[in-house]
Image 1 (cartoon, rainbow, N blue to C red):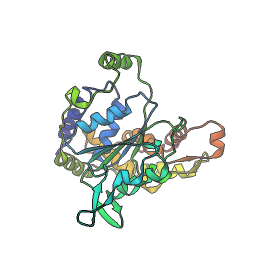
Image 2: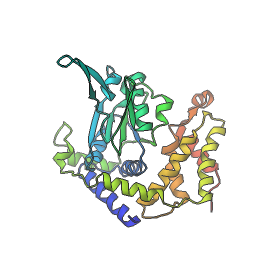
Image 3: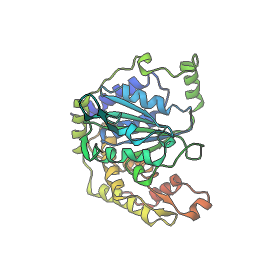
Image 4: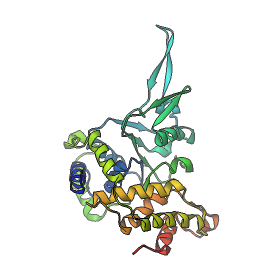
Length: 318
């Protein structure tokens, strides 16, 4: 595997997704980085901005097992991970696996279920395993969560716990499309009200588990110079010292930013990381891992603005 092969594979996935999705290049790039980094991605946006559509199409472009959970207020942890059900015919318990036993899991509107059920994904996302009645069950190779959520200001939402947010490699915020993109959306989808399935657009799986594992092995070998390691660490540590934050990013954030930067470099056809890779990925990597101070909230500041301040004030390696 070389950078050109990685770029070709990524273009194949992009081409399949763009059969149904107009625009959303940044979203797709972060999903690709998440896949190559063995990480999970949280996509936030108001209803109607194609969060579910792009997640479904991304999953359809991969020749991997796919599962979906529609999170609702009455969803229980057993509905996510599975449960043991007593079989009266032979008087024993039988495991009924939940939708988490897959490779690409779409957790749709994950913040519309209470924290107790949200927490059912904690072990799965960190350890790629779940515990049911005291027994550990490994998940499939390549397990990745692509979660969507509505802004927490909307009715019927529950904030995700900090521990679960920290499991996500990225939190990506989708804004409204540009006028040209919105016109393209209306031209492509304005003849129906229901969402069509990816199959209806002819989206096919163009990358299997063997391809993903090969690319991940290549990503591990991408060069990250000592000066760039220092840059990653300085960015994360600066978040813990910023006066506008109550809590900064965890050490896990530094590891994830380093891995993601390697994957982003591979997508750009390089076998080495440059500072711009780290700067570009710092916001989606850190925005959900910091907690604003009460004073910052009163002043109307947000996490993105403070992360931008940290990026601007941290010296960049030459």
